[in-house]
Image (cartoon, rainbow, N blue to C red; front, side, top):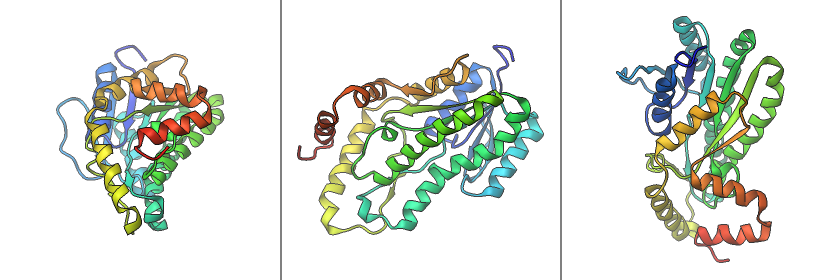
Length: 271
C-alpha cells in the first residue's frame, strides 16, 4: 500500500462522535473507509461509505463483512468503536441489562473480529484497533458495568494480539479520556433504581456532564486512531489525550492507597 492508498478500513459505530471523526480522519489519511451505524444512515459526501450493522447480531455482522468484501475485496484495518454506556449503582442494574451492555461492548467486538480475522489471515496482514477507555484502567463508581466491559476489552485485546502476531496481524487498544460527544446524553439508565442511591446517582450524573463539557474533542481520539493504524511498529496501547496519558501514568506508578484516595476525591466521595 502507498501513503495515499493505505488499504480498506472498517469502522463500527461511525454515525457520530468519535466514530464519525475517526472514519473521516482515516479517509483523509489515505484509507478507503466503510463505516457502520445500527440504523440506516444517509450516504455521506466525505468519501466514507456507510453500511448498517447491529454488532449484537451474528447475521448482521456477517452481511456487513460480505458487503465490504463485495465492494473492496479486502479489509486491512478494523476499528471497533460501537459501544453503549450505562449509569447507575451496580446494584441498580438487572443482570439482563448488564448482559446487554456486555453484548455490545465486548461480544460485539468479538463478533466483528471473528468475522474479519479469516480475511486478514488469508491476506497475512491486518490491524485491529479496539476502542477502550480510561475506564478500562481504573474503577468508576456508578459506571461499574461499563467499566467492566472496558476492562474486559483490554484483556481480550492483549491476549488476541499474542495469538495473531504469527499471521502478520496486530491488535491494539486506543484509550480515550472523557470526550465531548453525545455519548453521555445517550447513556442507558439503570433499570431497577433504588432510593438508597438516588442522591448519589443524580450527583454523579451531574458530575459526568461537567466532565464531558471540558473533555477532549473527538478529533483528539481520531488522530490517535490514525497513528495506531499507521505506525510501522504499533504499541499495544495508545492513550488518547492528556487526561488519558496522565491516568495511565498514575495508575502504573502511584501507590494503590494514594490512587484510591485521589479517585474518591475526583468523584466527590468521602476519602
